[in-house]
Image (tube, rainbow, N blue to C red; front, side, top):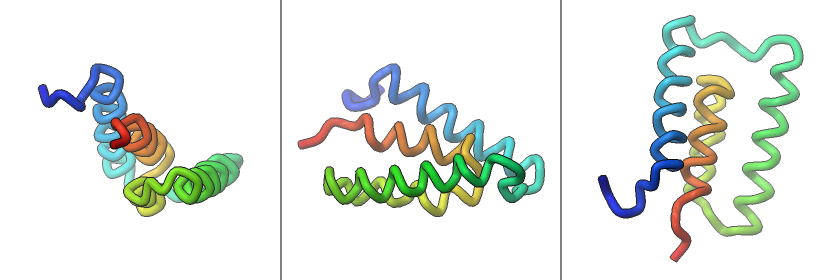
Length: 85
């Protein structure tokens, strides 16, 4: 296991892949009902925190929202939890 891949980061990565797989298996559903608010919240949070931390890699979370929150949120947490150098 690479030194930067802590157990918590491994959990985020596994959840990202699982969320993407479930979304693809179910046919890439668009956010329905109250999910749109959660998608918008994550998008705004990602944009604002990316500007503050200058962690530009975190912007890959935005296209991942197309696969749903189950993919995008753990991906964002995976990227955010990496060591800042």
